[in-house]
Length: 311
Image 1 (cartoon, rainbow, N blue to C red):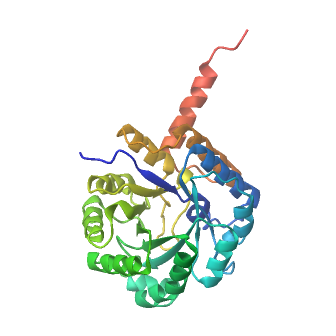
Image 2: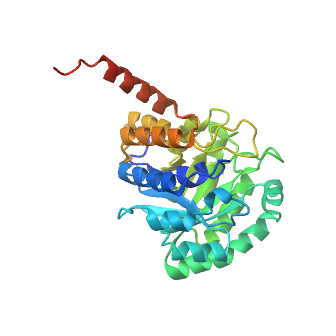
């Protein structure tokens, strides 16, 4: 296999991972989580979301979180910004990157944000223009690129159309997201190849949920066609309210274990991420969804118990 030597991991746990938690996560916990992820070596962390607290109450403390985290030079701290009000908040908070989001499914767009795909992209135009004017990095995310909970199959041509629209807005990076985790390797490769005809392959990223246990397979399939940016969530934090039984984003620990096993450099300390996954799981009283995380924690605990006591 001709695989990349380096892969960039975008850690989305603090935003995409926590936003669906029903019990409010304390700001102190969010700040500690991001600081630990920074120390582990991530170069891009999705830290907050500047959306209406009415719709996403879990993200209402975004400005406070951004003000309190310990930033490391060279790490991008990204925030979700659906409109100009959100963008202004992101600028005030010192965001390094703003993220706009659309869907490849008309049914999902109508049900989720009550407008067509074309209308949703038009709404983002002022945000994109303002980001470019201020020199802030702009990322576009395309949900339901591999399947939709309402319409089912999503044509590859529909994904390509949104990629083209986001390219025209000036996006620096575009995420191909399997929001409900139904994608399989062959379809993923078809979508990635088609998307790369409209946007540079090295600026496309894969965002895979593990609902059907296909996320790692889909990442490997993406690697094989040249994708070298992937999103992951520590301890597998997250879920999708549109797919019953959805297990959330692929766990960062599992992705790192696979990539490092393939000899691919990430610059991230797997052991540190495992401990971070344990921290956040305990802090919010949630089961750790990372298989690698659970396995290594068990292994380390057993080794510690077996070690002879000091005289």
